[in-house]
Length: 160
Image 1 (cartoon, rainbow, N blue to C red):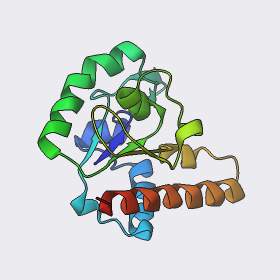
Image 2 (cartoon, rainbow, N blue to C red):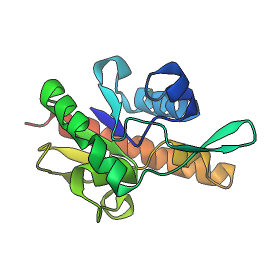
Image 3 (cartoon, one colour):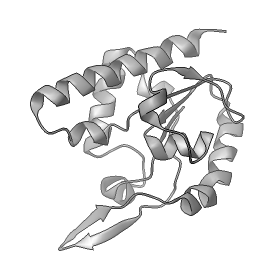
């Protein structure tokens, strides 16, 4: 099960998670890591798109702890129904929804963890962070780290 932050503009319009630019990167990385997206349940920790207008565009705003807490019952219900072998948190908001506000992806990235809500958890960056890298070299390096984190999750999901 993959848990992202919140819907983005494309996702809000489509009503489906990870269908915009970050979703395209995620799909490519999943395929490269050997994970079939059709076999993975994909959701978000926060269920609404928080944004501010900027001209004709809707610009993403990071959800706060109250919004994360307000949406937690839905995430818990999804976990009870899906009963995933492994939970992959994409980004800090997803990690904080599972582990609490002190969770930092930068410290825990790519490691097999355990939480009250899921016995096997791996956290990594949100694929949208790859879009914000300053140059092509950084994008390639961070993408390779992202794929490596997905492979850690795949191996951990197969372990008993």
